[in-house]
Image (cartoon, one colour):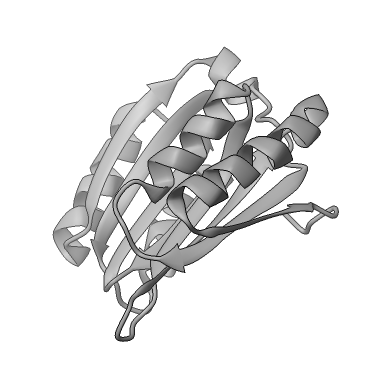
Amino acid sequence: MNHVLLSISGHDRPGIVRDVAEALLNVRANIEDSSMTALRGRFAMMLIVSLPESVKLGELKAALAELEQRTGLVIQSQSISEEEARHEPPEPDHVVTVSGADQPGIVHAVTEALADLGISIVDMSTRLGEGDEPAYMMALEVAAGQAAGAMRERLREVSRHIQVDVEVHPLESGIL
């Protein structure tokens, strides 16, 4: 079985996920993992798809080229090894939320603290709120494991240093 990583982006509109799913179905590609978001009128999606042995990579690329032409999406594809396809990502066990006045360096300060402790970020989302003083919000799902206590302490230091609110919560078993 061939596995392919797809990165898709373009102007957001209703029906993009349907259009992508239809193009993949037409070449019998199976969507195994996916993540998508819309940011300020732009759409971004990443997928890992598997192709049956009878379907050649060229068939997938032709279907994706037609989809690009028809929709204006930008699609990049790359084959991934079977080892990569079988790789299980770390399971998140905590959610870290950050909020405060917007300023450069918030993402760096928080992620540097996590990286220094060997903590993997599984998912991250940020948003700039509107108002007289824009509020910055960030949510991260992390795999802290045994470093959870050290993470809490280190993020308290980050919170004081860059003057933002940082909260850490255990992650209950989620849907995804």
